[in-house]
Image (cartoon, rainbow, N blue to C red; front, side, top):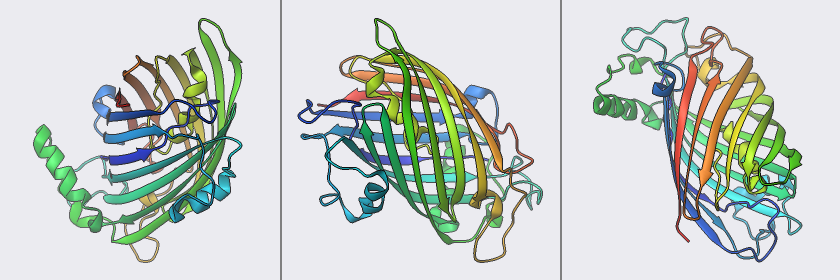
Length: 328
């Protein structure tokens, strides 16, 4: 299975407990995920992200002046002038293939070929040590996602085997999902070297994915207040955890997710298609480090996540490298 994200994000960056009138900052980042860091070839094998962050003058957005496609997320998070708000745009592409991409027809006991082209819009609303977030996911499944063309292009560029089974991929279908959650910064010790424990819970519903999840992360570093909220978006791959403005941190943590339905294992919602038994409980463990200067930053993490189907445990191991540049 290969999963590729080509993401262009416009993100208004949340700076923890910073209040109205905070100095404006604008950041650009590039992230690369690949299972080459895990020495495997299967599961989530590749990802690319482009994003930029902007902390606006005034530090918040009211429900009245956000675009219509953020109204639902703003209502769920309760975002108002009492805290800091973040708006995110993500456009992405996801690819899933069975373990043996040379087999035709594909193994009916393995996850089917599938591709998703999507937009995600997220709102984070922070009030000191508490951050609420909500994400709206809109996408298309099937040949319209252009996943076959993208994967073959990448494999030609890297000299990898060409996948042979895309003729058996899932059919075209519109996808939608909404996700809401809350993260807390706990046990924060503020000294020369800080540490904290970040915990969170979230739930989502839709024909793309329906699940509930809880997670916890231990971090050590500096300026932890300004970066803990990004952990809320890491499980959905909206953005990788990064430090900024001269901060740094190392972290270790994990999550437990119970999946009610997933298009990658269940197949098409409205017509017959290949499918496999769903692995309902997905455990994930992550370790990483992030650091930044005034204008540059970077991070590296390694994640071991359960598979999509019940027979694919251990097939989602990958590393992620992120480079961050301050533009303003």
